[in-house]
Image: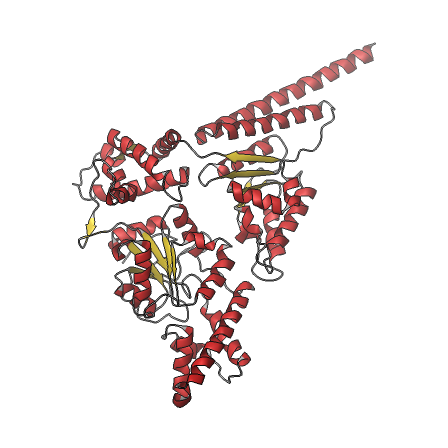
Length: 577
């Protein structure tokens, strides 16, 4: 009898301890969910779904402690929605909740894209993917724009290898790793339908809706408060109008667009204060006014198209022209990617295949790069070694034949991963695209070369990033003449004074300058030493978080982003010098 009483007492004590633990878990999870509610405005369906998952895990844990049957939960997820809807923030809080409940050892978040998982050469993808998985073990692996892993149109793509490794780890290590796939809903649906093995391993599909206008205004107020800024009443009204207009325009990115708008308003606020006396009050330093909002091109573009925008402030002017940055124009070879080494290999291979005894070394090629265009380069070289033979019709046909072979060889080398984008290029293109900044290509290389490079580096829908592609087929003279830039300006429907061009060579700089466009130069080893004295800025590259721009190169930032470009364009004296 005494033994029975003792056992009952022990069981009661165990259950009491378990109840205490469950109560503590509930309090911790409630605190995390409250933090999520403070961090994210709106998103009621998303928050409810996260709360439901947390409740299920709490009950499962309590059932297991009581000896009741419970299965190992499948916690892999898919977050779908437009940019700026809070997917990454929710993923961070999900990792925290799973750690607090004991489902994850570490509870950290590792956020990656295709570039972090897929290699550019045979044998590179598996080590890259496994290294990322190793870092993510015990936490959450967040794969943004996961659909870029799957490129069925490219038979030589290595993304499928990464997918197969992910599938294996998601199944075998689901008690130590949660994978969250994220991206646009339509593309994610297609991704899962094309990869049924992936779809079957994802238990929770959560859609993130776009924010309503009033929610975006509340987000702006929270962001401003965090930076110790505020709107005055006219600015609050102006920002409400801004949101309604901006939501109707391309590339709207919800909270991200709000953040970008506030950054631009801060820039205009600072410029305005610098034109006032030195004795600025705290209120002036903290207050965003209506003119800081209405100077946005969301209003000015509407005004220029005949729509009423109310009491709009005039833009500051530079040399009698509006100086707002409205577009970016990129050269391709040497600028987007250091392609010239691969072009040189392709030329020399084409010479062999065409039965020519030509061979260009790097020093020769550096000199030949002064001639714009591959066919023109070959014609110039032929003329220098055989003036009589170079002038025949047979020579012209031979050059076209060799150039066609060379173009195919270049595409093959690019497709095999021999070329990557230069530092900062991918980041800047994506950021500019998401911010609604129009982009264009202005190059003298062929359309086939442009497509080979950008298809490999940006994916099947690479064309969406650019308003226009002006290439070797564009009418007019080649660089250093400005024709290709003038065509780009016309297609963009902007003035030269509202653009920045990116080039790597003196010929490109001269072409952009003749078109009236301020230019940033990022030389390669083929073009270093050329005359770049008329450039706005000369940098070794545009920088990335893991490869910053070296100090003393003309800017105070470690990388060139959209805000940096807008500051430089508005006032070139902002660069260090």
